[in-house]
Length: 108
Image 1 (spheres, rainbow, N blue to C red):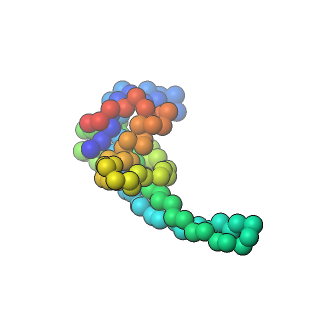
Image 2 (image 1 turned 45 degrees about the vertical axis):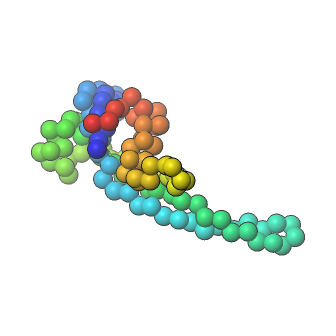
């Protein structure tokens, strides 16, 4: 899976940009809160850290996967509830499409 479409980078338009997620790390973070009475409550928060590369087009990716125009990184909170698509790769692409710079891209 990849995303494709028109992107602008440093003032230049990339007509058939090809965005490929390259790495995802899923982690759980435990944190505590203490109430006024001293009671400590623990909770777990899930995070997904990712990196993705943007290429001129699909042919540029196929010819040289190490030669991206630029790399993006980010973090989001993945869905883990019942009935949710638990595929972390698909969730990462869906997250990217919520970002203003990438919301016009489509699945490829």
